[in-house]
Image 1: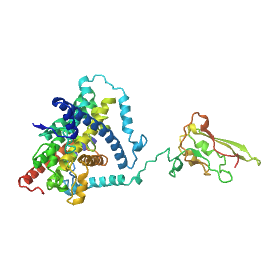
Image 2: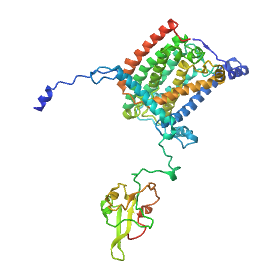
Image 3: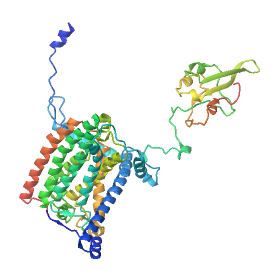
Image 4: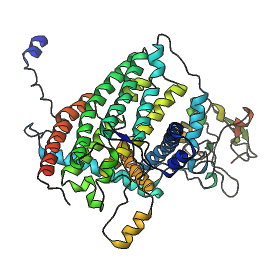
Length: 360
Length: 174
């Protein structure tokens, strides 16, 4: 696996100031700080956005009191959660109980490390980026499973087993959708996948592969909704049946880590969707000279965030519109419908790629 | 006998578990692609409905209460605290018949009567104890003269119980 540095002006400045090993360490620390800041800020912003968007989908207003448009509401929530006592229920497995909340957020943190935010804005570009993304996003499942096990509570255990089954199942069709794009673009590096979509909007993989691209995007949205534990596929929480599922016993900062991870995961997953299907940081081009020039003048990082937030809005739209599935329906939806369809779709895409039927 | 009768009833045929989302035609019990497509279309219809809500903020039903206190609109049948409407001369229509007092399950109403010049029995004081009232509307239904109503008042918090003992009529008699 070859990892090559992506040159960003700030990284070059650090390299010119410090000798080689120290520059690498300093750049690494800077990258960690930036990703940590992004994780925190985007989670806080997404909590606000989720509440606002869901309120307006339901003809309500949402938070309006704390700060302008209620923007400071998630900060108030976070302070409240931090001030709460971090309870340890009797009989819990100490290591599992306190390690579990850290794993999901670690997973999404690690996914963001390979996310290409702009041409030169990526912590590291792995040749096998897709494999890495799939591997580290499994940490979220692990966190849910050991959190449910360590809580010493039957509802937590039931909820975590249920969501373990759900997440393992839906990971299959999600990976198949990603694999399709890897096959079409001929690379597993996230940066290369973005660069393979250069050109007009029609060159994005959602449109470039006739039928198969859109179908893969559709399936990716469904399976990643399940991966994110969001409604209508939020069976692991299931407030009405399992009193909250795997995080029943968690309070204070432990609970807020799970809660935060849910939103950071959503950001990471929408970012992946934008990278794979919507051209990532590339500006949309329509083949009209002046319009293209104006759109290309906008920095890529802004396009990346716009596309990502568009997908996040889609996730929220699903969540606040559709009714929830039952657990057996959920699993048979995956095994009997989504998985065969995505396999057939993979075959279709393979045919298209082999016979060069990709829309130029 | 009923036991044997029920035992002879053949068990209902086990319904074949259908694929999720694949709707079964009620006529022949077979999966119907048309119904499946119709249901899939319904999902998008639902998304259209929610998008209409987000597109038109004027349809928001939330009322921001302390700010809009002066412009609050109440539904016709809103049940706030009981009021006694008075006309422009300051007169009310209560005849002190005490039907409301008898109708009240909590004893929140006491009609104190007095005699006017013609020694006719008239209303002296309509004592209404808000502290024990549940706003059940029974007194209003009992009143044959439409003398009392459910008003819009809902801000009933006080620092002591004294302000909750109200006298609804402004003057004695009718």
